Amino acid sequence: MSIEEWKKTKLVGVIGMGDMGRLFANHWNSQGWKVLACDQESHYEKLKEEFADSEIEIVQNGHYVSRKCDYILYCVEAENIGKIVSIYGPSTKVGSIVGGQTSCKAPEMAAFEAHLPSDVDIISCHSLHGPKVNPEGMPLVIIRHRNTEEWKFEFVQSLLESLKSKIVYLSAEQHDKITADTQAVTHAAFLTMGKAWQANGQYPWQISRWIGGLENAKMNISLRIYSNKWHVYAGLAISNPAAKVQIQQYASSAGDLYKLMITGKEQELLDRLTAARDFVFGGLKKEHSLLLSDEILEKFSLGTKPLGETQKPNSHLSLLSIVDSWHKLKINPYDHVICSTPLFRIWLGVTEYVFCTPGLLEQCIKHSITNQDFRPDDLEFVVAARTWSKVVSYGSYKLYEQEFNDTQKYFAHMFPEATRIGNEMINTILSTT
Image (cartoon, rainbow, N blue to C red; front, side):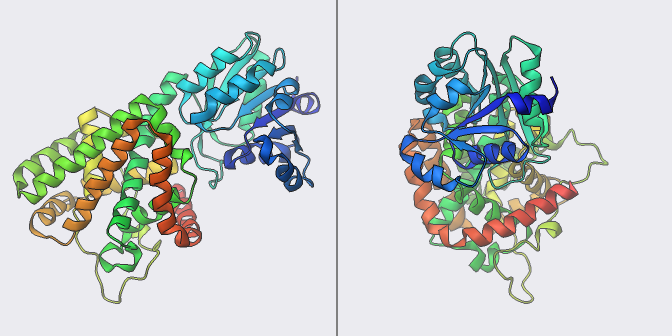
């Protein structure tokens, strides 16, 4: 059957009309697919009014989506996937296909296997980007978990390929390992920066020592993360066991490196970070071009550098800690570039810049030992890293939400500008790497 024939005969359903659910529903509708969608029943009237002029059919709850649709995509928080599938899963249409968009697939697959009828196929996905990013060219994982007929896979594949994303085929287990490797510590680092700046009562774009190329990337991405909803990051961090281990190691690395800095153990610090550099970046070929440069990032600033002011040396503890943690966990970040998010590519790019630019790592180490300008900032960074590690280790979504929202409120007034500049920065970086 052709795609055009499927569009005439197949019904696509979205359960959960948050930001990502809306992205899928609106896109498929724009491509000519018939779409049914729902959210919490309490949102029904408001959602129906909002989509009154759309061809998307808003229904009262997931039972109406499940019993009618040929492909049903659950776009709900990882925290709630089990509960929601247990309610609506038994209503799933005979012979249909179900998938989910959660960031951690282990609980999602467990929910599907426990609550879906045995005659239902499971073909899931995960778009590895936020709802504010154009999906074209971004990684999109397809997970063929339980598939009885080839045409069903082709049907779902045609739906997802219409997003024009970069398709990657993985198992649920492979997905969770790779997303932990590429996203868990990346998110933790940027969340930690924001909390540290808040603890110091700083808006870093107002402070000259924070204004510069690499600092622009840190600020823009940290604010970009805090401008989203907390559950986007909580699901991966708390539900994925590998993510917990990595976030814990990141906090440990930050603490260990900071202790070496303040006790003046320069040679021990150099030896440790040189070993980390050799492990992570030692396999790069001589002709390898750096993913990013300070010059590329220089123009994406939230603040204005004072006239004549030059970029001040920085310990770059957040960057040193990520490479140290990769080394300790024996993770090679380049193994997963095919599944990398824009944030991960930026994070890999700035760490690569610090570690692979001749003399820059040594400068960071020397500065961290001899200069105290960033000591208060680094102290708060270590405390914040441990805070996030503890929150994740407790497995408490409520505590995660509280910590996230507390910092989110502090920076909220800058989100529109940060989003605008962040989008420009990401588009520039993706077009040049």
